[in-house]
Amino acid sequence: MACHLSSTCLVFSILLLLLLSFSSLPCQAQLSSNFYDDTCPNALSTIRSAIRKAVSRERRMAASLIRLHFHDCFVQGCDGSILLDDTPSMTGEKFARNNNQSVRGFQVIDDAKAQVESICPGIVSCADIVAVAARDASVAVGGPTWTVNLGRRDSLTASKTLADSNLPRFTDSLQQLTDSFASKGLTQRDMVALSGSHTVGQAHCATFRDRINSNTSDIDPTFASNLRVGLPCPADGSGDTNLAPLDLVTPNTFDNSFFRNLRDRKGLLQSDQILFSGGATDSIVNEYVNNALTFSSDFAAAMLAMSSTTFFHFYDNTCPNALSTIKSAIDAAVSSEQRMAASLIRLHFHDCFVQGCDGSILLEDTASFTGERTARNNDQSVRGFEVIDDAKAQVESICPGIVSCADILAVAARDASVAVGGPSWTVNLGRRDSTTASRSLADSDLPAFSDSLDRLISLFGNKGLNERDMVALSGAHTIGQARCLTFRGRIYNNASDIDPDFASTRQSQCPTDESGDGNLAPLDLVTPNTFDNNYYSNLIARRGLLQSDQVLFSGGSTDSIVNEYSTDSSSFNSDFASAMVKMGNIDPSPVLKERFAGFALLSTNFSTNHSNSVVGVFFIYVFTIHSAIIVAQNY
Image 1 (tube, rainbow, N blue to C red):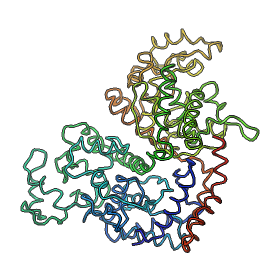
Image 2 (cartoon, rainbow, N blue to C red):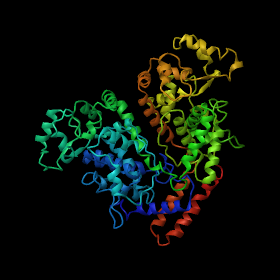
Image 3 (cartoon, rainbow, N blue to C red):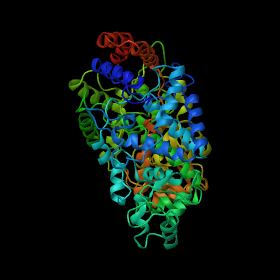
């Protein structure tokens, strides 16, 4: 097959592996949606054409390709390892318990790879093709689309043992499923959304025989009887491979019928029905039943989060104590000043919103550019630079030149949240540091304290974040302080959207003249230094300090989300963590993308004659890495 061990993908992977052995720079794993724009501009359209043709021939193939990507990502990251055939030295994933005679679509990936190779030999990884194929398969059957970040490396190895231990099973309990997804940095909401892919596809009798013969209260008797008789799926053990659609109503259309089936006790698999069984995920199932758009949006977001699982352990070998060192620095800083937690979360937010999470906000002005620090919504406002400097210095002392400032900033935001009682999340790593910054971009891209709801929705939407993400991220204002300048207009306007007593209290700290511009007030008067959901209760009580906060509860489309978070702190924490992961994946500016292009082009020639492999790779390394060294010296 085109993507197993004798393929171009293997040669490409070997080159990358050897290159990495020469280099400890943290710039090699950055994903970008436009990764192949220069080196293979027609790659995505070629893959899309192959997938459309395959799904047109067999609608079931859409589900198979989505599942193939899922089963790839859940074992050792989205690295194409599921494609690898067994070798004398390796037993791969294809024959793992939950893959054997089950995962399929390999020939479709082979065909797509062959077509891409015909136009761009040695450029596009098999892992990226699997990721793009899942997105295109969803679209082909009426499902959502999403931006696929690209630049994955193909694995050289696979593990049946890892697949057996990491892949969810059709008999898993809700807690087992929750733990399994959490181990990949995915929330319960992600889990329920991703399970919704069972709105298409089929299952073997062996996976649901026990359920339809159980006579338990969690299955509709008529539904069970029809499956026992009509398939057939007899209790005697015969018919193991007989197939039944996961969704009897619209088996070949990606919609939200799956969730309605669960509510009606017509989930085919036990691991599906458990999502609606009186537990913590019932409310999410109900929400998706009633709102197909929310399901589609959350599914796309969860697919994006899942496809980033390759990079949780980016520094495990090159700087194994990096994360603990950063955490220690952040804990010390927040212990010295509780407000610093909010400042570090905000610093990461303001970094990501301008030209991606690239550390550009840290750069001081130079003769050639005016940076972001003095932008309208940053000047005399963003802070915490000295904490990042201290964390960087400590990391440099143990691993010089390895960990990027952009990654430190992202990890610091997570650790700051935890330090004040907020949620944790898995931070994807491998960002590269920017060498430039732009005040004009910061002025245009950052939300302002006076923005309307429509303006906020537009700004967040431009970054691939939906309304739910926006409301969740705004909840960071449960901690921190604001300057009088940012809320003076609100507390003196006598409008109906502010509680008069609240306004009067705040006026004592913020005079009408400009003399008090820098005076500070807590964003949350009740629990100003604790990360909780009190922020949303404040909005409902018309006690949001900033106008851009109060508009989230002003009779508009986000009112229901505010209400939900005010009564369900677990939902808020989960969504906040998920939104921080999404925000942390915002595409950076492709400052160093040409380095990858040069390597990919050279690797094509090298793959045809690789007898002098070490010499060839060293040449490629020298050719492609010189510009990155300059960046590393400017951390």
